[in-house]
Image (cartoon, rainbow, N blue to C red; front, side):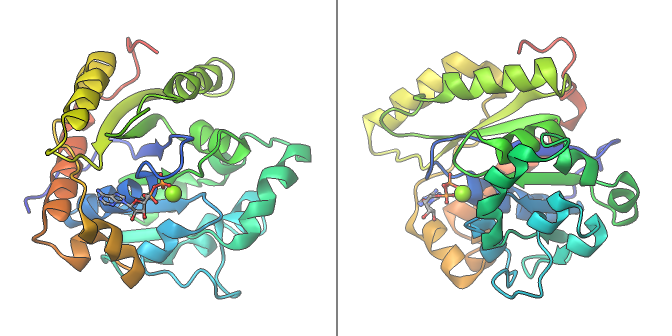
Length: 276
Ligand code: ADP
Ligand code: MG
């Protein structure tokens, strides 16, 4: 795989869709792995209490000694202390999620600066010193305070959309929330990328969904589509990304291509003049 350009400024991308099971986590870890393989420094922040991204990146997040994003949000550890090395690639780092993050959604409500905790924790000095070109944030399946923290910390939103019935259900609400965050908390935020996931070329439905999403989001939708494949769903069980688990598979190739597209779009991803 050829190398991608280092972006001038670290790109912070939130992977969001409040629907569960649409491929957020799979997309977050595999896009991250693809960018790392393409020669870039990548940090994944796991904001889902289930910790599936941490698992896929080979982080032992059930070990009580592992510092986590929960302690980072509470200000108990520094970004440096919260970062763990992924086994997926030497360029790939992760702030893991532990189960105590499940309580954070409620605990955050009464905290000072509850929406800006993650943004404030992302120390630019650490990001620069660690050579981090991309921060990819994996969100839980809700539009609660953890997702709001992710949207406040990021500039870009990547929306994975599953090529299934009701694919666009809830997307209007997601866009409304993005608009609210951009109006009140983070005016730089915008939807930069839409990725079609779990595409089954044998069904007419998948094509209809893809067409509808492209009509709705135009060129924000990546040309690359992620196929439905059993191997993609097997990889996390081995603590691996699909790119590690079976690099020659269609799933791995498509995530490598999608990562390349995102990396090459760097030049035209300023929010200025973007319809929100
Ligand atoms: P989310 O984070 O949005 O809940 P996940 O990434 O965890 O979604 O995916 C939901 C389930 O679907 C997981 O079991 C995952 O392994 C599986 N999956 C994700 N992408 C694919 C794919 N392209 N083909 C087959 N299974 C997939
Ligand atoms: Mg998930």
